[in-house]
Image (tube, rainbow, N blue to C red; front, side, top):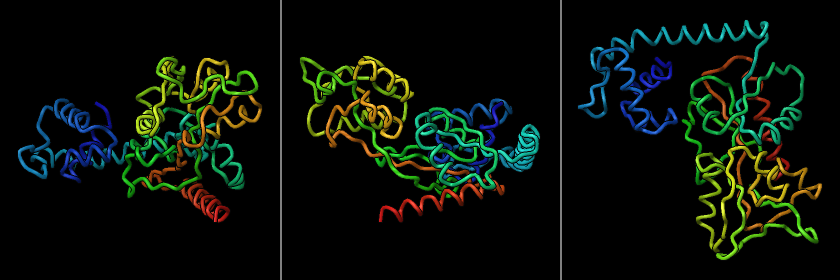
Amino acid sequence: MDTRWLEDFLNLSETGSFSKSARQRNVTQPAFSRRIRMLEHWLGGQLIDRSTYPTRLTDLGEQFRDGITPVLRELYRLRDETRAAAGDGAETIVIAAMHSLSLGVLPKWLHAIGTEDRPRIRIRTDNHHDCLQALADGNCDFFLSYAHPDHPVLLDASRFPFVSLGETYLIPLSAPGPKKKPRHALPGSAKSPIDFLAFAPESYLGQVVADTLAKHKTPIHLHTCYEDSVADALQALAMEGHGLAWLPALSAADQVAAGHLVAAGGADMHIALDIRLYRARNRRDDSAEHLWSNALAYAKGLEARES
């Protein structure tokens, strides 16, 4: 039995809607329904009356909800106590961050907010989906993520507020060729497509890039020769001349400045991304509140400099 099933069930008992709960739990509706079925199978009884809308709990479901709510609360309390003990009594803030942001943004932000009274911080570097799931499941305090208007981060704003820590761009970059021109330059042609180092199609940045290219006004001819979900891996391949990659400008800035990578297309090929810090509102200890206050102040400073 997975504790996520219990959280799914309690969420559904509040919303009365499989589709709404699936959105709030950041899973597809079929996957959410499957998890509720698995919980019912594990218990050996039906918890949900699916013949009505909004859906209602059966008598067994109401009994289980009333019993499991304090149990789950106590389980999380014990988990937090165990984590605190494992950290030698020091308060530890867990920040989940996408790979390139953990290198290109997180250190600069932490430096900017200062070290005075800063709690112990543990960085959990992972892909977008797993970071998002960690936040939704209560396994981290904050999530540092990219966001694109056409691909919203599916989090309930009342439970997971966010603050913008700036913006960056995905820029098409290539190793330099003769006269420092890009070895792989856009837009390519049907007869000679450009070798493309792509983010994995299931990854967040992979979806953003693919959707942007599909909507581009002029044809772009690419031949995907490599896929990876980690920007650093694509960057290393691009530097060796294996193809072109859309890379986060912040993480590639040093290599561009050193001349190891050059722009392979104009500004119309740049993809704007917001950099957001999400927090779990239910994890409200003093350390998390302090870090959140610093993040809000940092964001106001950015706005003041831009105005």
